[in-house]
Length: 205
Image (cartoon, rainbow, N blue to C red; front, side, top):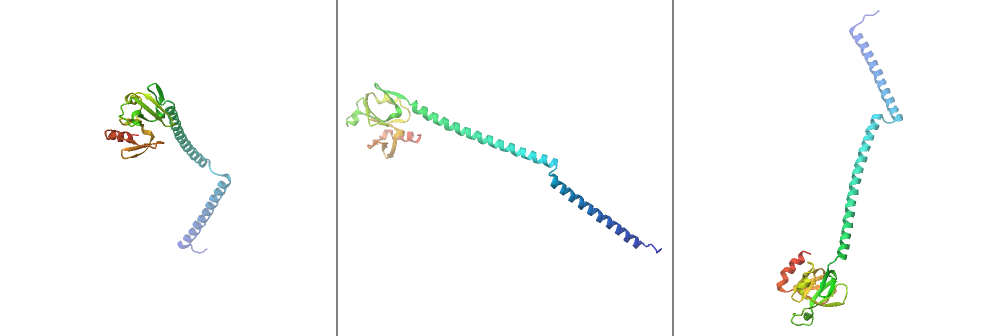
């Protein structure tokens, strides 16, 4: 039997450790490979499935909230549109019915009113007033004062000179002290005394 030396013992130990390491490494590789193959065929773990389910539930809740918000906005827009339509219908149907002498007429049908004397180029003192309409070429003559008529009309009407009341909503264009109404060829004169009030009223329309 030969002599056992320190170097020979060390060499043997390294060989044993190397062998153990290789075996352990191979076992580890085999284990993780087997685990990967197992997961591949078995699918995800219960924990992973639960986490994914929670994530999907959260995303679904967010989508529901967004959908609810969009529905609320659409409902609001629809309500606004319906309300505007109702207001327009009510405005058309409930337009003020005014008394002009013995005549009753809805104010939104009036384009302008003039003194009969003005149409005849006289002094403007006549109490007979001629009503011109927005939707007709017919006119009506009534016995009334501008004051009694104006107090019944809303803010869309203005007496622009001592002989004429016009519906400001019917104005087509303004050139200096002259204004033109829709469907009316003749111009209307804004008096200097009423110019400031006229500009203010127009700016508020």
